[in-house]
Length: 568
Image (cartoon, rainbow, N blue to C red; front, side, top):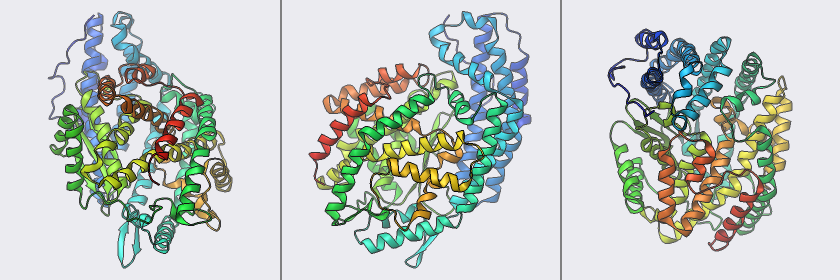
C-alpha cells in the first residue's frame, strides 16, 4: 500500500507541548482508536509521528535553553520540570502506543520496505520497556544535568582574566612551552576541584543503570544499552575486535606521529601540553576573530563546494538556529539538535577563535545537512539515522571541506589544517577505543571502587595512549575520562564515532578519486535518514561497514601516504 499523508490538523503547531495536560488528550485519542484496517494503522502511525515531533521539539527547545544558560535558575527549572513531570508520562504513553502498533495484525499488510525498520525498532522498545525504569531514567537525566551545571560553571583565572574552559584551549596552542604548561596545569587544577563530586555522580549513574538493566532482564547495562541502541549489525564482541584492530593498525601510527612531533619540538618525550602546539613553532591557526566571521566563512566554503549544501547552510541564518560563541554560563561542548516539528536545526558550540572551532562548525553543519535532507519524511523516527551513520554525515564534512579552507587560511596554513585533520584519524581512534573499552569495563564490573576504576583507566592509557609522558601527573591522568561528556549523558554512545570515522575516511578516499561522485553519494545516503538498515546506508554512500582490520589497514596506509606528502 502507498504511504498516506499526515493530517496537519491533528496536532496544531501552536500547541504548548511542555505541559503534559496539553498533550495528554492527543495520546489518549491515539490509544483509544479502533484499528479496522491497515489504512487505520498507517494513519495512527503518521498522526503519532506528528505528535511525537511536537513533544520532541518542546523538549529540544527546553534542552537548548538549559545548555545556553546553565546559570539561569528559571531556565534550569523549566527543563528539570519537563524531565520530572512530562517525560515519564511520555515514556508510558509511548510504550502503550508501541504495543498497540506492534501487536496489531495489520502490520503484516503495511508496505514491508517502507515500515520494516520502523517496526523492528518499535519491537525492541516494547521488549525493553519497564514501568519501574521510568523514574530511574528521570533520575539519570537529573544527574546528567548536575554534571552539565558543574562543567558550565568552570572558569579559570589566568593571566589576570577569567576564562571558560573552551577559551583556555587557545593557550595550549601557544609556541611558548612554559605558557602552555602553566595554562594546562591551571585548567587541570580547576577540574580537580570537582573530581570527587564527578566521581560520585558517575558512581550513582552506574548503580542506577545497572538497576535498569536488571529490571529489563539483562546481566549488565552494556548488553541492555547495546540492545536499546538497536545495534542489529554488530555486537559487543565486535566492539572488542574493533578495539583490537585500532590497537594493531593505528596505535603504531599514532606513536610514529608523536615521535616525529617530539623530534621536531626538540623534546625527548611529549608531555600533555605539547599535543596541540604547532611543532614548527608557528603561531596557532586562528581562522576567525568572532562567531559571525566563522559562520560567513563557512558559507563561502559551501558556495564553492556544492549549490545544494550551500542553500541548506544559508538557511541556518534564520529561525534561531545558532549559538556559536563561548561565554560564561554555557554548557561545554557542541551539538546539533533537530527541532522536529518546525524542521529547524540548532547548532550549539563554544567558539573561541581556534582551529578546532572551525572543525566543530563544519562537523555540526554536517548534522544539520542530515536533518534538513530528511526533514520531510512523514515518519519522525526516520528523520534520525543510526548514530553510526549520523556521525558519518558530520565527520565527512571535516574532510570534504579541506580543499576549501582558503576562505580562512593561507596556502601554508591550509596544509597545516589538512595535516591536523588527517592526523586525527590515528590519534582520535585510539581515544575512541579507550572510551569504549572503559565503558565496557565500568558497566560489566558493577560495584567497583573509584580506585579500581582509576587503575582500569591507567591500563587503557598504556594500551592506547601512544607515548605521551604523564609522569608526575598520575592523579590528573586517572580522572581525565571525566571530561568526556558522553560517559554521563549518552552511555555507550561513543564507538559510533569510531565506526563513523571509518566511514568518513572512506568518503575522503572516494572524494580524492571523484569529488562530485562522492558528494552525490553523500547526499543520497543522508536523504534516506534512518529509513534503511545501517549496512544499506553505508552502501548507498559508497562505503563499507567493516569493523575488522581490513578497511582500517587500507585507510591507515592511505593516510600515512598523504601525511608523508605534507610538511610537518
